[in-house]
Length: 396
Ligand SMILES: *Cc1c(COP(=O)(O)O)cnc(C)c1O
Image (cartoon, rainbow, N blue to C red):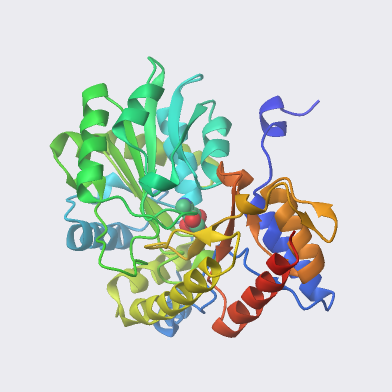
Protein backbone atom coordinates (compact mmCIF):
# COMPACT_ATOMS: atom_id res chain seq x y z
CA UNK A 1 0.00 0.00 0.00
CA UNK A 2 1.48 3.33 -1.04
CA UNK A 3 0.92 6.63 0.73
CA UNK A 4 -2.77 7.55 0.66
CA UNK A 5 -1.79 11.20 0.47
CA UNK A 6 0.51 10.71 -2.51
CA UNK A 7 -2.01 8.45 -4.24
CA UNK A 8 -4.63 11.20 -3.97
CA UNK A 9 -2.50 13.67 -5.94
CA UNK A 10 -3.47 13.98 -9.60
CA UNK A 11 -0.82 14.50 -12.29
CA UNK A 12 -0.46 18.03 -13.65
CA UNK A 13 -2.99 18.23 -16.51
CA UNK A 14 -1.04 20.98 -18.26
CA UNK A 15 2.13 18.91 -18.35
CA UNK A 16 0.07 15.91 -19.48
CA UNK A 17 -1.50 17.74 -22.44
CA UNK A 18 1.84 19.18 -23.41
CA UNK A 19 3.43 15.72 -23.24
CA UNK A 20 0.66 14.26 -25.40
CA UNK A 21 1.07 17.00 -28.02
CA UNK A 22 4.83 16.49 -28.06
CA UNK A 23 4.38 12.73 -28.41
CA UNK A 24 2.04 13.13 -31.38
CA UNK A 25 4.48 15.58 -32.93
CA UNK A 26 7.32 13.08 -32.50
CA UNK A 27 5.18 10.50 -34.30
CA UNK A 28 5.00 12.84 -37.26
CA UNK A 29 1.49 14.21 -36.63
CA UNK A 30 1.13 17.90 -37.51
CA UNK A 31 -0.06 18.99 -34.06
CA UNK A 32 -0.56 22.55 -32.90
CA UNK A 33 0.07 22.70 -29.16
CA UNK A 34 -1.67 25.46 -27.25
CA UNK A 35 -0.88 23.60 -24.03
CA UNK A 36 2.54 25.07 -23.35
CA UNK A 37 3.02 26.72 -19.99
CA UNK A 38 6.40 28.16 -20.87
CA UNK A 39 7.78 30.85 -23.19
CA UNK A 40 8.77 29.53 -26.61
CA UNK A 41 11.82 31.85 -26.70
CA UNK A 42 15.36 30.76 -25.96
CA UNK A 43 16.96 32.04 -22.78
CA UNK A 44 18.67 35.34 -23.73
CA UNK A 45 22.32 34.95 -24.73
CA UNK A 46 23.84 37.04 -21.94
CA UNK A 47 22.14 34.83 -19.35
CA UNK A 48 23.39 31.63 -20.97
CA UNK A 49 26.89 33.11 -21.15
CA UNK A 50 26.76 33.86 -17.45
CA UNK A 51 26.05 30.19 -16.76
CA UNK A 52 28.98 29.10 -18.93
CA UNK A 53 31.21 31.55 -17.10
CA UNK A 54 29.94 30.23 -13.77
CA UNK A 55 30.89 26.71 -14.80
CA UNK A 56 34.35 27.82 -15.81
CA UNK A 57 34.76 29.75 -12.58
CA UNK A 58 33.98 26.64 -10.56
CA UNK A 59 30.37 27.19 -9.46
CA UNK A 60 29.95 23.45 -9.38
CA UNK A 61 29.57 22.89 -5.65
CA UNK A 62 26.90 23.24 -2.96
CA UNK A 63 25.85 26.78 -2.19
CA UNK A 64 24.10 27.91 0.99
CA UNK A 65 20.74 26.10 1.10
CA UNK A 66 18.68 29.28 0.70
CA UNK A 67 20.79 30.53 -2.20
CA UNK A 68 23.98 32.39 -3.06
CA UNK A 69 24.23 35.66 -1.09
CA UNK A 70 24.90 37.40 -4.39
CA UNK A 71 21.58 36.21 -5.80
CA UNK A 72 19.70 37.02 -2.59
CA UNK A 73 21.13 40.54 -2.86
CA UNK A 74 20.09 40.83 -6.50
CA UNK A 75 16.57 39.71 -5.56
CA UNK A 76 16.39 42.29 -2.76
CA UNK A 77 17.45 44.96 -5.23
CA UNK A 78 14.81 43.85 -7.73
CA UNK A 79 12.05 43.80 -5.11
CA UNK A 80 12.93 47.32 -4.01
CA UNK A 81 13.25 48.74 -7.52
CA UNK A 82 10.23 47.03 -9.07
CA UNK A 83 7.87 46.54 -6.15
CA UNK A 84 8.86 49.11 -3.54
CA UNK A 85 9.55 46.29 -1.09
CA UNK A 86 12.39 46.33 1.41
CA UNK A 87 13.87 42.96 2.33
CA UNK A 88 17.20 41.77 3.68
CA UNK A 89 18.91 38.70 2.17
CA UNK A 90 17.88 36.68 5.24
CA UNK A 91 14.27 37.06 4.09
CA UNK A 92 14.93 35.53 0.67
CA UNK A 93 14.85 31.80 -0.03
CA UNK A 94 15.93 30.72 -3.51
CA UNK A 95 14.46 27.39 -4.61
CA UNK A 96 14.27 24.99 -7.55
CA UNK A 97 11.61 27.01 -9.34
CA UNK A 98 8.64 28.93 -7.98
CA UNK A 99 6.70 25.67 -7.79
CA UNK A 100 9.24 24.44 -5.27
CA UNK A 101 9.00 27.79 -3.48
CA UNK A 102 5.26 27.20 -3.06
CA UNK A 103 5.94 23.74 -1.68
CA UNK A 104 8.26 25.27 0.90
CA UNK A 105 5.71 27.94 1.78
CA UNK A 106 2.98 25.46 2.66
CA UNK A 107 5.41 23.14 4.41
CA UNK A 108 6.33 26.09 6.61
CA UNK A 109 2.84 27.48 7.23
CA UNK A 110 0.42 24.59 7.55
CA UNK A 111 -0.61 22.21 10.26
CA UNK A 112 -2.88 19.27 9.38
CA UNK A 113 -6.38 20.51 8.59
CA UNK A 114 -5.42 24.16 8.06
CA UNK A 115 -7.42 25.72 5.26
CA UNK A 116 -6.05 27.72 2.35
CA UNK A 117 -8.46 29.83 0.29
CA UNK A 118 -7.82 29.43 -3.43
CA UNK A 119 -9.87 31.58 -5.81
CA UNK A 120 -10.95 29.69 -8.95
CA UNK A 121 -9.91 29.66 -11.75
CA UNK A 122 -6.58 28.76 -10.16
CA UNK A 123 -3.21 27.50 -11.28
CA UNK A 124 -3.48 23.70 -11.32
CA UNK A 125 -0.77 23.01 -8.76
CA UNK A 126 -2.07 25.13 -5.86
CA UNK A 127 -4.63 22.69 -4.44
CA UNK A 128 -2.30 19.73 -4.86
CA UNK A 129 0.63 21.47 -3.16
CA UNK A 130 -1.63 22.46 -0.27
CA UNK A 131 -2.86 18.89 0.09
CA UNK A 132 0.67 17.49 -0.10
CA UNK A 133 1.41 19.60 2.95
CA UNK A 134 -1.64 18.35 4.90
CA UNK A 135 -3.68 21.48 4.22
CA UNK A 136 -7.23 21.70 2.97
CA UNK A 137 -7.79 23.72 -0.21
CA UNK A 138 -10.95 25.82 0.00
CA UNK A 139 -11.97 26.78 -3.50
CA UNK A 140 -13.83 30.04 -3.97
CA UNK A 141 -15.52 30.45 -7.35
CA UNK A 142 -15.19 33.80 -9.05
CA UNK A 143 -17.20 34.97 -12.02
CA UNK A 144 -16.50 36.35 -15.44
CA UNK A 145 -18.38 39.50 -14.32
CA UNK A 146 -15.66 40.25 -11.74
CA UNK A 147 -13.02 39.38 -14.34
CA UNK A 148 -12.31 36.22 -12.34
CA UNK A 149 -11.10 38.19 -9.34
CA UNK A 150 -12.10 37.26 -5.82
CA UNK A 151 -13.95 39.82 -3.69
CA UNK A 152 -13.73 40.37 0.05
CA UNK A 153 -17.36 39.27 0.42
CA UNK A 154 -16.49 35.95 -1.18
CA UNK A 155 -13.44 35.58 1.06
CA UNK A 156 -15.53 36.39 4.13
CA UNK A 157 -18.04 33.70 3.17
CA UNK A 158 -15.23 31.12 2.98
CA UNK A 159 -13.59 32.09 6.27
CA UNK A 160 -13.57 29.51 9.08
CA UNK A 161 -11.57 29.20 12.30
CA UNK A 162 -9.19 26.92 10.37
CA UNK A 163 -8.41 29.43 7.59
CA UNK A 164 -4.67 30.14 7.49
CA UNK A 165 -3.91 31.68 4.14
CA UNK A 166 -5.18 33.07 0.83
CA UNK A 167 -3.47 32.56 -2.51
CA UNK A 168 -3.46 35.54 -4.87
CA UNK A 169 -2.00 35.11 -8.36
CA UNK A 170 -1.78 38.35 -10.32
CA UNK A 171 -1.38 38.41 -13.28
CA UNK A 172 -3.27 35.14 -13.24
CA UNK A 173 -2.58 31.83 -14.88
CA UNK A 174 -5.02 30.84 -16.45
CA UNK A 175 -7.17 33.99 -16.82
CA UNK A 176 -4.53 36.68 -17.41
CA UNK A 177 -6.44 39.08 -15.16
CA UNK A 178 -4.71 41.56 -12.88
CA UNK A 179 -5.82 42.82 -9.48
CA UNK A 180 -5.89 46.59 -9.10
CA UNK A 181 -4.28 48.37 -6.18
CA UNK A 182 -7.72 49.00 -4.64
CA UNK A 183 -8.78 45.38 -4.97
CA UNK A 184 -5.54 44.25 -3.34
CA UNK A 185 -5.92 46.84 -0.58
CA UNK A 186 -9.35 45.42 0.24
CA UNK A 187 -7.97 41.87 0.35
CA UNK A 188 -5.02 43.05 2.46
CA UNK A 189 -7.44 44.66 4.92
CA UNK A 190 -9.36 41.40 5.18
CA UNK A 191 -6.17 39.35 5.66
CA UNK A 192 -4.85 41.68 8.36
CA UNK A 193 -8.21 41.79 10.18
CA UNK A 194 -8.29 38.00 10.28
CA UNK A 195 -4.58 37.29 10.74
CA UNK A 196 -4.30 35.37 7.46
CA UNK A 197 -1.19 34.86 5.40
CA UNK A 198 -1.30 35.92 1.77
CA UNK A 199 0.69 33.90 -0.71
CA UNK A 200 1.24 36.30 -3.59
CA UNK A 201 2.33 34.49 -6.75
CA UNK A 202 3.78 37.25 -8.94
CA UNK A 203 5.57 35.09 -11.50
CA UNK A 204 3.92 36.90 -14.46
CA UNK A 205 4.45 40.45 -13.17
CA UNK A 206 6.59 41.47 -16.16
CA UNK A 207 4.20 40.15 -18.78
CA UNK A 208 1.51 42.85 -18.80
CA UNK A 209 0.29 44.23 -22.11
CA UNK A 210 -2.06 47.11 -21.43
CA UNK A 211 -2.02 50.04 -19.06
CA UNK A 212 -2.58 47.95 -15.91
CA UNK A 213 0.21 48.09 -13.38
CA UNK A 214 1.49 45.24 -11.28
CA UNK A 215 1.17 45.88 -7.56
CA UNK A 216 2.56 43.56 -4.92
CA UNK A 217 0.08 43.23 -2.08
CA UNK A 218 3.04 43.15 0.32
CA UNK A 219 3.69 46.82 -0.52
CA UNK A 220 0.32 47.97 0.84
CA UNK A 221 1.28 48.48 4.49
CA UNK A 222 3.44 47.23 7.34
CA UNK A 223 0.95 44.66 8.60
CA UNK A 224 0.27 43.01 5.27
CA UNK A 225 4.00 43.08 4.50
CA UNK A 226 4.57 40.78 7.49
CA UNK A 227 1.74 38.44 6.52
CA UNK A 228 2.68 38.12 2.85
CA UNK A 229 4.94 35.60 1.21
CA UNK A 230 5.89 36.93 -2.23
CA UNK A 231 6.58 34.13 -4.71
CA UNK A 232 8.42 34.93 -7.91
CA UNK A 233 11.11 33.53 -10.18
CA UNK A 234 12.93 33.84 -13.47
CA UNK A 235 11.12 31.10 -15.43
CA UNK A 236 8.47 33.15 -17.20
CA UNK A 237 10.10 36.59 -17.39
CA UNK A 238 13.41 35.42 -18.83
CA UNK A 239 12.37 32.24 -20.65
CA UNK A 240 14.25 30.18 -18.06
CA UNK A 241 11.78 27.41 -17.21
CA UNK A 242 14.38 24.65 -17.45
CA UNK A 243 16.85 26.36 -15.17
CA UNK A 244 14.62 25.91 -12.12
CA UNK A 245 15.14 29.10 -10.13
CA UNK A 246 12.32 30.62 -8.09
CA UNK A 247 12.29 32.51 -4.82
CA UNK A 248 10.26 33.79 -1.91
CA UNK A 249 10.40 36.98 0.10
CA UNK A 250 8.80 36.77 3.52
CA UNK A 251 9.24 37.52 7.20
CA UNK A 252 12.64 36.36 8.51
CA UNK A 253 10.93 33.68 10.59
CA UNK A 254 9.08 32.08 7.68
CA UNK A 255 12.24 32.35 5.57
CA UNK A 256 14.26 30.58 8.25
CA UNK A 257 11.75 27.72 8.53
CA UNK A 258 11.52 27.34 4.75
CA UNK A 259 15.32 27.35 4.53
CA UNK A 260 15.48 24.58 7.12
CA UNK A 261 12.95 22.47 5.23
CA UNK A 262 14.75 23.01 1.94
CA UNK A 263 18.14 22.23 3.45
CA UNK A 264 16.94 18.67 4.08
CA UNK A 265 14.76 18.24 0.99
CA UNK A 266 16.99 19.43 -1.84
CA UNK A 267 19.88 21.39 -0.32
CA UNK A 268 20.51 24.38 -2.58
CA UNK A 269 19.19 25.14 -6.05
CA UNK A 270 21.60 24.50 -8.91
CA UNK A 271 24.70 26.67 -8.47
CA UNK A 272 25.31 27.78 -12.07
CA UNK A 273 21.60 28.40 -12.61
CA UNK A 274 21.76 30.75 -9.62
CA UNK A 275 24.60 32.65 -11.30
CA UNK A 276 22.53 32.81 -14.48
CA UNK A 277 19.63 34.21 -12.44
CA UNK A 278 21.91 36.99 -11.14
CA UNK A 279 22.68 37.88 -14.75
CA UNK A 280 18.97 37.81 -15.59
CA UNK A 281 18.01 40.16 -12.76
CA UNK A 282 20.97 42.53 -13.04
CA UNK A 283 21.60 42.46 -16.78
CA UNK A 284 19.89 44.38 -19.59
CA UNK A 285 16.10 44.07 -19.55
CA UNK A 286 15.43 44.81 -23.23
CA UNK A 287 15.14 41.05 -23.88
CA UNK A 288 12.04 41.06 -21.68
CA UNK A 289 10.57 43.94 -23.66
CA UNK A 290 11.18 42.09 -26.93
CA UNK A 291 9.42 38.94 -25.70
CA UNK A 292 6.59 41.00 -24.28
CA UNK A 293 6.05 42.72 -27.61
CA UNK A 294 5.78 39.38 -29.38
CA UNK A 295 3.32 38.08 -26.76
CA UNK A 296 1.22 41.24 -27.09
CA UNK A 297 0.79 40.83 -30.86
CA UNK A 298 -0.21 37.19 -30.45
CA UNK A 299 -2.62 38.01 -27.66
CA UNK A 300 -4.42 40.67 -29.68
CA UNK A 301 -4.73 38.35 -32.65
CA UNK A 302 -6.07 35.45 -30.58
CA UNK A 303 -8.62 37.49 -28.67
CA UNK A 304 -9.98 39.02 -31.85
CA UNK A 305 -10.17 35.70 -33.69
CA UNK A 306 -11.74 33.75 -30.84
CA UNK A 307 -14.39 36.33 -30.11
CA UNK A 308 -15.39 36.24 -33.78
CA UNK A 309 -16.23 32.51 -33.63
CA UNK A 310 -19.91 31.87 -32.83
CA UNK A 311 -20.34 29.91 -29.59
CA UNK A 312 -16.86 30.72 -28.29
CA UNK A 313 -15.59 33.76 -26.41
CA UNK A 314 -12.92 35.03 -24.06
CA UNK A 315 -12.19 37.95 -21.76
CA UNK A 316 -9.11 39.81 -22.94
CA UNK A 317 -6.18 38.69 -20.76
CA UNK A 318 -4.26 41.68 -19.39
CA UNK A 319 -1.13 39.68 -18.61
CA UNK A 320 0.62 36.29 -18.58
CA UNK A 321 0.43 34.35 -21.87
CA UNK A 322 -2.88 32.51 -21.87
CA UNK A 323 -6.32 33.02 -23.32
CA UNK A 324 -9.09 31.48 -21.23
CA UNK A 325 -11.81 30.52 -23.68
CA UNK A 326 -15.42 29.93 -22.67
CA UNK A 327 -16.64 26.81 -24.47
CA UNK A 328 -19.86 26.33 -22.50
CA UNK A 329 -21.81 27.53 -25.54
CA UNK A 330 -20.97 24.22 -27.20
CA UNK A 331 -22.20 22.03 -24.33
CA UNK A 332 -25.16 19.88 -25.23
CA UNK A 333 -24.40 20.24 -28.95
CA UNK A 334 -22.72 17.78 -31.28
CA UNK A 335 -19.53 17.57 -33.30
CA UNK A 336 -19.96 15.07 -36.15
CA UNK A 337 -22.63 13.32 -34.14
CA UNK A 338 -20.66 13.21 -30.90
CA UNK A 339 -22.07 15.02 -27.89
CA UNK A 340 -19.96 17.72 -26.25
CA UNK A 341 -20.82 17.63 -22.57
CA UNK A 342 -17.77 19.22 -20.98
CA UNK A 343 -14.56 21.09 -21.68
CA UNK A 344 -12.73 17.76 -21.34
CA UNK A 345 -14.77 16.38 -24.22
CA UNK A 346 -14.34 19.59 -26.20
CA UNK A 347 -10.57 19.33 -25.81
CA UNK A 348 -10.48 15.61 -26.61
CA UNK A 349 -12.57 15.97 -29.79
CA UNK A 350 -10.57 18.99 -30.90
CA UNK A 351 -7.26 17.13 -30.48
CA UNK A 352 -8.53 13.94 -32.06
CA UNK A 353 -10.08 15.58 -35.12
CA UNK A 354 -8.16 18.78 -35.74
CA UNK A 355 -4.87 17.85 -34.05
CA UNK A 356 -4.87 20.87 -31.79
CA UNK A 357 -4.04 20.60 -28.09
CA UNK A 358 -5.75 22.88 -25.55
CA UNK A 359 -5.99 22.38 -21.80
CA UNK A 360 -9.48 21.74 -20.37
CA UNK A 361 -10.51 24.10 -17.59
CA UNK A 362 -11.38 21.28 -15.19
CA UNK A 363 -7.89 21.25 -13.68
CA UNK A 364 -8.12 25.01 -13.15
CA UNK A 365 -11.43 24.73 -11.31
CA UNK A 366 -13.27 26.23 -14.28
CA UNK A 367 -15.08 23.47 -16.20
CA UNK A 368 -16.70 25.86 -18.71
CA UNK A 369 -13.34 26.92 -20.13
CA UNK A 370 -10.25 25.72 -21.94
CA UNK A 371 -6.85 27.39 -21.75
CA UNK A 372 -4.86 28.30 -24.85
CA UNK A 373 -1.29 29.44 -24.43
CA UNK A 374 0.16 32.02 -26.80
CA UNK A 375 3.70 30.93 -26.16
CA UNK A 376 3.97 29.65 -29.72
CA UNK A 377 4.78 31.39 -32.99
CA UNK A 378 2.24 33.55 -34.80
CA UNK A 379 2.14 31.23 -37.87
CA UNK A 380 1.41 28.32 -35.53
CA UNK A 381 -1.28 30.34 -33.79
CA UNK A 382 -2.86 31.26 -37.14
CA UNK A 383 -2.94 27.63 -38.17
CA UNK A 384 -4.36 26.52 -34.83
CA UNK A 385 -7.11 29.11 -34.84
CA UNK A 386 -8.09 28.33 -38.40
CA UNK A 387 -8.52 24.73 -37.26
CA UNK A 388 -10.54 26.01 -34.32
CA UNK A 389 -12.83 27.81 -36.75
CA UNK A 390 -13.29 24.61 -38.75
CA UNK A 391 -13.98 22.65 -35.59
CA UNK A 392 -16.51 25.13 -34.25
CA UNK A 393 -18.14 25.35 -37.68
CA UNK A 394 -19.05 21.68 -37.50
CA UNK A 395 -20.67 21.86 -34.09
CA UNK A 396 -24.47 21.68 -34.36
C1 LIG B 1 4.82 28.57 -14.17
C2 LIG B 1 4.17 28.97 -12.89
C3 LIG B 1 4.81 28.81 -11.66
C4 LIG B 1 6.10 28.04 -11.46
O1 LIG B 1 7.15 28.40 -12.18
P1 LIG B 1 8.58 27.71 -11.98
O2 LIG B 1 8.97 27.26 -13.34
O3 LIG B 1 8.43 26.58 -11.03
O4 LIG B 1 9.44 28.78 -11.45
C5 LIG B 1 4.19 29.28 -10.52
N1 LIG B 1 3.00 29.88 -10.58
C6 LIG B 1 2.35 30.04 -11.74
C7 LIG B 1 1.03 30.70 -11.72
C8 LIG B 1 2.90 29.59 -12.93
O5 LIG B 1 2.22 29.70 -14.07
